[in-house]
Length: 300
Image (tube, rainbow, N blue to C red; front, side, top):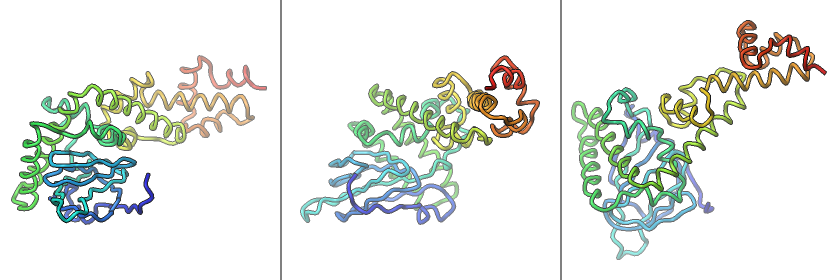
């Protein structure tokens, strides 16, 4: 990572109208302005040329390049400093995931979106994969046309413009997802990133297994839909989230029963069970023994 000063953009100036989406067409300067932000950004180079610094990488960019930038990834676009160079103009669509209507899960036309609607699995692919996320060739005019109509809606704010923007955003995402699916290389990296997301959730569960963690909270940490998160979690661990947490708790209960003099009711509370009857049931189901029998057989 370079040593430039990085500032955080919370998006408050973009989302002060209460809607988690913002669009503009911006002429980039040659001045440094490396930043991270608390929203997702989809940037399309409309004209000119320059550079895009993204994480530890630097790219020369020109008309037709499209980048997906996730939360907390340092980046900046810069025009070339030469007066003779045409200015770098970039369409920006920034939004927070809550702008997407999760009820779209029921629409079969969005099957690709459901598969990838794990925003982080798509938008936070490592910076070395960003070339794979550029939409090039014949699709450029279609992408640019989408940005133009979105910007018109956002600027004019006629009745129903938010609903139109949501529909246009889904159209843009589907177009991007279809392009990504054409690249086996990108898909393999996406699947690998899914595994990293689940490992991240597993680390969270191991550190917090004594407290109740809601599925929606776990899924949102990775920007996955709950249904898709459950599918990935079971594929990775062979268990549901609930089963995994129960196993973590009972494994620690076994350790406490073996290595401490704590009473069974105390051990149950220590590993997150408020109901001793439920603790006994789960313990026997996973170990084949009641806690009292296990303690007698393993105490030192």
